[in-house]
Amino acid sequence: MNCMEAMRDRLAVLDPVSLNIIDESHKHAGHAGARDGGGHYVINIVSPQFSGKNTAARHRMIYSALGGLMKREIHALALRARAPDEP
Image 1 (cartoon, rainbow, N blue to C red):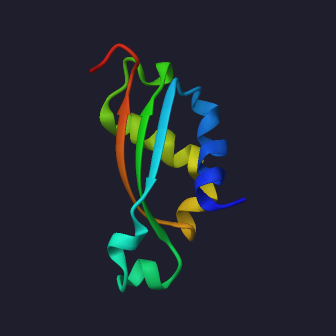
Image 2 (spheres, one colour):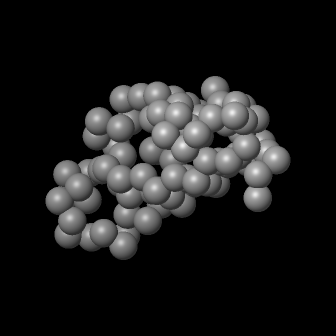
């Protein structure tokens, strides 16, 4: 299973109605994190579990779901986490 598949599997606990993961690692060639094997990703996720939560809480939920992937496989994340009723 590649990293993006593992990320999808782990983020499933958030019951996303929409999940888009983009690998931007190629834009960071030569960067220390890229040399060490960690990827750079953009995650756009819409989940009803985010309703009533602020941005920091939403990000903590995502980091918690990703767990150990944050230690090596993922070097950097750009996150957009929304509830279904948000634009």
